[in-house]
Amino acid sequence: MGLYTRTTRAWLEHRFQRRDQAGVYFAHMPVYGLGHPAGEGGHVGRQARFLRILRALDGLRFDTLLDVGGAEGYLAHVVRGMYGATTATTDLSVAACQRARELFAVPGAAVDSARLPFADGAFDVVVSSEVLEHVESPVETLLELQRIARVAVIVTTEEVRYDRAWLDDYLWKRPAWPHMERNLFHPDDLTGALPNARLLPQCDTPPPQQVLGLDEATAWILANTRSESLQPGRIGVTAIVPGPDYAERPRRSDDATLLARLLATKVPPGHRAPVPTADADAAWFATLRDPHTYGALQQHAAFLAGSRHYAIADGVPDFVDVEAPPPSRDALVARLQLHTPAHRDALLALRDRLFLPDRWSQDVFDLTRRDDRRGFWPNDQLVARGEGFRWQATGNDPWVVTPCLQRPLRALRLRLRIDAPGVPIDAGTGQVFWKGPDDETFTEECSVKFPLVNDGTVRDYDVVLAGHARLPREVQWLRLDLADGPCAIDFERLELFS
Image (cartoon, rainbow, N blue to C red):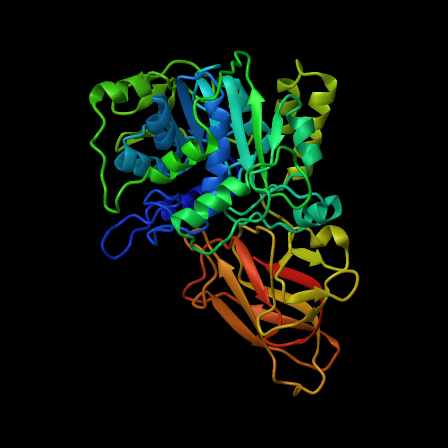
């Protein structure tokens, strides 16, 4: 896997171990009920998305379901309770699967979504919700989901945009920050990549971010999940992809009944499910295969496949091979030989559009050249004044994040022009932040400041990092705070010294 997947996995391991002072797990999904404070927000949008998924499931014949990227296993728990299906979850994070096991006794495994450890057609339905935008290899992930599903694949992502020019600009600027919305999609991308899929929006309008009461939330969700086609203004996509054994059935429940049961499915904070039995673990383990060959595994204290060794941590097998190279374009071409030419070309075009280098190896970025500006991510306080990195800073904290660097750094040189009429020539201060492998984000402790000269001329600024107590062996990203107040900024060059 590439550097992005490794850094994202580290971020996720930290996130899925978050607990409050009382030791209660801080949930990603609404596992404790609508609006509960011991979890992330956005519950109305999440439950609207789940209603779309349940609506699709309600019209399918299925007995088994796998959730790929299922976080702490909430959806697998919901589906098991509502349909009596045998369900399981996977995630890039071992900790996420451990939470699924302890909260819901849902079996799980840590996986790379581009190399799933299951045989062809191992499950009736495979769900992957709000995952595709985060993965390093989205096309290979789509193919893997379809490979292991007999009846259907259900994929959701909020990251659908209708303005191709805006979308291309976003993809150009993204710096591959861990777990960021790395992949965004135009509806044409989805119809080309999933030609047989039914594509539905998640919500008709943007979901409210504030906490709503049960009656308000129910009314909003039922009123805003009715649209049957993707159109500008609607939010996200739910893609229902038929498998080789696709089989519909009359729906059992109306939307109000599905939603009521969904919103009633919760556990109290601090809940721990009974430990799965040895027979339950054995049944789950029997479905697992070597993700490289799809061959059988031998189980001792860990899983063995030839010389490969996959650990088991608290009942969760870990199939994430951090040393494996990411899938290549040539390998994808070979995999697509049996696809129709139109489908093959659409998948390769999507792969090329979403591809992002692992890291930038150059030491000099001439930012007057467009190609050298790729991967630099300015915040919204930097408003373009023309071509290139010529900005008007509108606030007191304008910054730009570099592409992924992943190298030792001792110093850098920035070529800037700062112009703030009416402000003293020596009043401004710049600041350089860095993030290393053990840092979750940029912090004041991992930064150095440097004085700016506000005289409207282009100057070189040398910033020394070497010797700082918090400087890591390798720097992954820099955040360059190019000013500390409103001004005109021309950023022409960045030079790195390793």
